Amino acid sequence: MLEPQSRAAFAEELKPPPGFDLSYAVGTTFTLDLATALSVPLSFASRRVSAADDKLGILESIRQFTDRIDIFCQAGEMRLGTNSDLVALLESMIHPVDLRNHGGLFHPKVWFLKYRNLNDKDDVAYRFLCASRNLTDDRSWDILLRLDGRRVDTPNAELRAQNEPLARLLRSLPDWSINPLDPARAGRVKRFARWIRDVEWEQLDGAAPTFHFFDGTGASTLDIHGTRALVISPFISDDGLAHIRSKLSGAVALLSREEQIDRLSPESLDAKLHTYVLNKAVLEGEEEDAASRLVGLHAKALVLNGNRKARVVVGSANATGGAYSRNAEMMVEFELSRAKYGLDATWEALGELKEPYLSDGGKETPEQEKLEYELDSVGRQLASVRFWVQRVDEKPHGVQVWADSAIQDVLRRASRKGITVRWEMLSNPAVSSYEFAVTEESAGLYGGLDLTDISPFLRITVTAENGTKQTTILLAEMLGDLDERRDAIIARQLTDTRTFMRLLALMLEISGLWMDEPVNKTGAGFLFNGSGRNDEPALMEAIVRAVAGKSQGLEDAKRIIDIIRKKDQDGTGEPILPPGFDELWKNAWKAHRLLQKLNKTGSADGQG
Image (cartoon, rainbow, N blue to C red; front, side, top):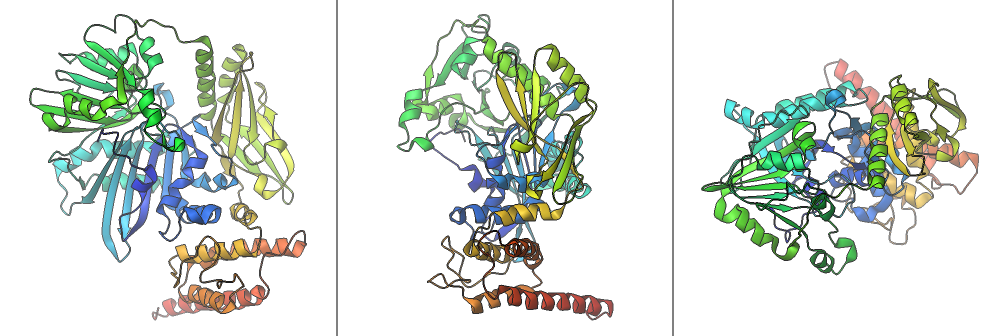
């Protein structure tokens, strides 16, 4: 579990077991890169749609799976990552949260996953991932624990007590969300909390997991005791280490970052504390490909030696006072063989990855770093205020953006420190850059926008008097939204006939209408022959199968096709719909509506 030689790709751990499909997923993270979040629905997409499908494969997997995924992150810790207008399709599945008056941070990094057998709807599998990794493209050394499980037929009190920390976290999520969740999504999260109580998880060498949920009030079932111990934590504090060491009778090995060890007080660096850091030379030389190298420490773990057993605890909590008193965290514990999993065995597994680091401690945090932390704090406070974006005009569109009155207190405190705040709409910053003023109730009114320029993602830039800037993204609540806004974003990706045909293929394929051959990255497959010419009979077959199969993909495709048809009629660019497609589509859609009508009539007559 702590062996650096064993590598696991996070996206691979999300993928359903063979023969299964994603039913529902709930994920939590402290920081979130929107671009990295695009990889999540792609992990659940049909195995025929791979990264080779590039933007269109990602686009269609997002369209198909965002309704099955909810991701909760700390408000004010959202970033864009790589620029992509496809992040607009993630709006419904991302939920920034705040612990309200607790004063702590939302810090768990877990995933709850439910899969359903494609051939037997009653066959359901569960998976729980507990990590130290955030949903970002960071390449630090992290820890990931995976547990697979099944619900028991007969619920029992012992199992429900074991899983209650997981259920408590799930139940808390909708209440912590800045924007009220859609009732259907909120209800689904609460139902997942009930389902998870009866899941029996796989064991590790005969040991069942023990779950520890820190709810931000200082309450936790994690009792740290033992003789010798190993503490792995990228961030540390004197009070956090004191808490961990208070019930340990022997020496403690601490693996952390150089600057964190240097800032401990000299009193903390006593003879019983042995400090280590990652060996940079080993990290830099372990992979030929620079992009695959680990670049730092982000793992969190405790290995506690007892008289006969070892306790291994992994998860999200750093060795800080905030983690154990104010933050929301999740940790998982196993009581295992001391010979196999204890401090000495783990130390040997780490090998040359670690090296001793001696420090006298007592160093102050640099003023620039303190300033950046202050700006981050202002960004989190702003992102914890409710914002609204409302569409107010039609073609060209206008929007109004405003915030809850609570923003005034945040702005006043920031102003007294010489901090200014500017916002812009993530989709089109050129038309919406605006500086907040303490006395204004409305943040801005804008007109003349294209539908795809409108977004509830707002980029907030917080600037200090010396010019230091920190940026975060917040998610406003969208009022007066149109379904066609997302369809227009999809249609904007379709630049020619070939990309349109590929997307249509994916929309029908992921909807469950499997074709004889997959669609490959060149566009060849069931819609095109080897020369790339339009294969009308194959296209006809695909659409007919969609009509007969009552595919939701056909309904979704119509909205995209309507937008593209309007673009083609404008005559502003090369036509996208292939010759003859309009007549084919008109007849297919007519047949689809007729079958819908017949099905409804038959059901009403008791013959459906």
